[in-house]
Image 1 (tube, rainbow, N blue to C red):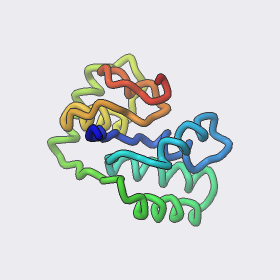
Image 2: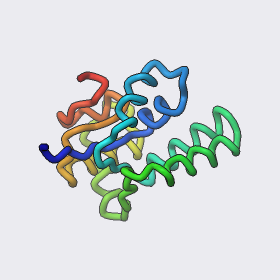
Image 3: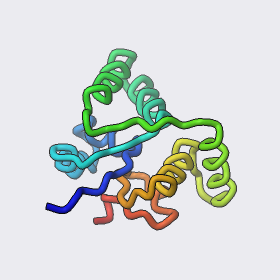
Length: 136
């Protein structure tokens, strides 16, 4: 059997998985049912926690964090000052796009780790040519 390629997971994919009312919930429920090795960034974790905190309450924010802690194929990659500088480069490279720092950091992680699949509902994460699973 061929080795499975890891995928980068963005906030939108996590929200879609956990929010049954999300349009992309069925897609991500299927993908997460038998996932390959996955990675994300601490910025995505913070963005997702904030979404559940604002949309619902502190308890749901904590449930989101507990879910990520238990998601065994998911590795949260460290992000340091040099990674943030590279992410800022993407913000300057695409000034016409409403990229967040979390988005730009995701673009950098995709390039740095040569990841060829992105689990996201955010079309901006395909700016560098990495395909989004929502298009497949």
